[in-house]
Amino acid sequence: MKLKIVLRLDPEDGGYNVSCPALPGCHSQGETVEEAVANIQEAIELCLETLNQRARPTSSDDQVLEVAL
Image 1: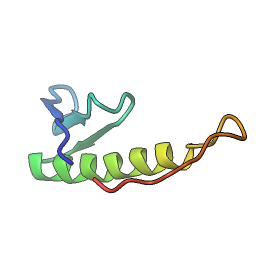
Image 2: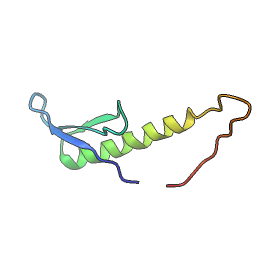
Image 3: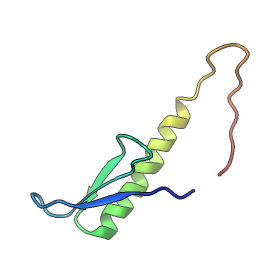
């Protein structure tokens, strides 16, 4: 799976701010582009893991299944 990220130079503190628009609230930062990208990759993994853990059936007829991407 490929997700787009947005990388912004942080003029106040230096370094970079980075976010993943497909996952609202998924943000990170880093001193270099490489560090910021590595940090957002980890943040994306954690966001997706958390969202996946929240999957719960809402009725007794529901099933929770997994798919590989």
